[in-house]
Amino acid sequence: MVDTFQKEVQCTLCPETFEPVIGPEEGESAYPIYCSSCAQCIIVARSNPVRVAFRDVLGLRDEALALALQSVLAPCSCSGEFNHDAGRRCPKCIYKIERETQRTRKGKELETSFECPWNMEELKKSEGKFFEYIFQKVESKEETLKQLIDRYELGEMDAEAYMEGLDALRFRESTQVSVIQAWVMILGSELAFRAAEEHGLVERYGSRVLVSIASALEISEGKSVLATLAREIKNWDGPIERELQTFVAKIGGGF
Image (cartoon, rainbow, N blue to C red):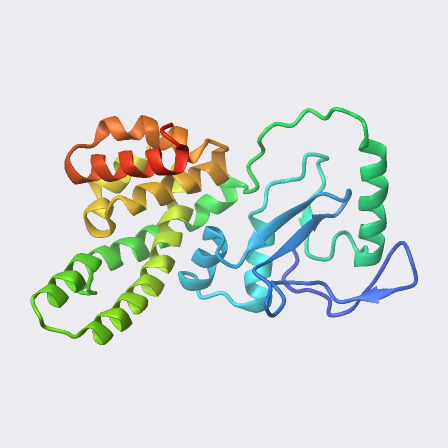
């Protein structure tokens, strides 16, 4: 694996030179990483769980973050590797290849099957660090949503302070839940929910963490969020069961 990117790359298909894109442009929420052999790409969002985990747990930024993401991507279905320089092909040439591919495919029925975008064997190397980060947060003294609500209802803070606290908590917990998602993708659907229960994640984050786990499994295993939660509901009772039932009914239209 390379340990740096060339700042300026000479396209192998035309006289143009270009700079590889290693993250979302300003104002953009995601960016593509193209296969080095064909025109397929993986869209990586700023909020992608693996990206967030590498950034906030491993402390990676910019080029180091892009290299780490590239190293844990699964091979393309054509057997090529996804690479930030798209196999040394400039964006204009990639666009032309995409257009040609679309014309070739037009009118043809394509068989599609789910393919996990991540190389789980490579991603598993970070499992221990993800685990340590998650359970430091579980055992920390950071205020939970329930504690924040309790303080507000007891009159210990005014509405403005409550809203500020709520915004700060949402931002903090969104990162924590993203790391949980990266971790459960490594664990897989057979272990994910029971591990979350065993280690107190549901107690800390509530039913929303179960929805986030189902969302992560959709990324890694292609399993529908609603179908996963509909099966998972039977393992819960009380408020968690009711909240999951409400979510499934609301989002799935009575799935």
